[in-house]
Every structure is written in C-alpha cells, then in structure tokens.
Image (cartoon, rainbow, N blue to C red; front, side, top):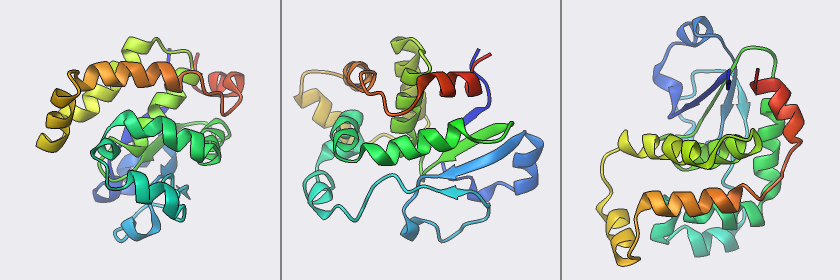
Length: 183
C-alpha cells in the first residue's frame, strides 16, 4: 500500500501546524522563484520547470500542449536531472508524509506524481485516474478541450499514452523509492 505522499496545489493558505498535525515532515515546492511570493512554509525549493532553458520554453511555453501531459516527455528528455532530483529528495526524506506542490497541482505535480507512481509500480489505469482527479478539481479550460477534440481524442486517452511513455524512464533507484513509500 502506498503511504506518506500528498500531491497538492499551493499550500500557502494552510497553517503549518495543520500540516504537521497531518504528519507532513517534508514539503517540496516545485514552483519557480517568481511564483513564491506568499511563501509560508519551510521546505525544499526544487523548481521543476528549468525556466533558464529559454530554447525549450520558447517552443513549449506558447503551445496549448503545455497545459497537458503532452509536454511531460519532452521535458523529461530535455531536463531529466530536475525530476530525478525531486524523486531523490522524496526517497531520502525523513519519516512522515511528503507534500509536493506547484501552483494548481496539475502540471508539475502531475508529472512528478506520474513518474513517481510509475517508479513505484502502480498500475497504469490508477495513474491515469490520479491525473484525471486533478483535472476535475480545476475550472474547465476550453482551449485545451478544443485541442483534444481536434486531435480526435480525449485527455484521458492522451494521459494513458503519456503514462506508457513516462513509465519507460528510470530516473532514480526504484527500490529506494519503494522502500520509502510502500509497505
């Protein structure tokens, strides 16, 4: 059974005492420096985007695919060390829950959750369900919905395809992650 992982949007509105009462001992912040104006909690700042890679973001930052899992694989191929660093920090975290977050809890946390769950051996359909849960908590994005209609597919089908691709990446010692988060 999976334990000690909390995927979140920004927890800046939640009191640190509440998080500690919930067993959170590690907070990993995936946001960029310019997104951290309301920082309330100590933790590891491991910005995932790699905004200094202007070439990558010049291409991907303007595409509608950026708001979908379709950018996960290109990001993992271009900057695997960023995701590996997050997985390593999770695996090496002290006992207790690890809360990882970005701003809205879909894209950066979605990619890390997908990669982590693949490394932990979670079945692909459960990983798809996990991602789709994050989408249902957000307001509809007509631009993205229209994009998938034009592709003759659905977001769920696309997420399933991406899970298969992401599952082939081994960025960190799967056994160490499994010892930390499975019982």
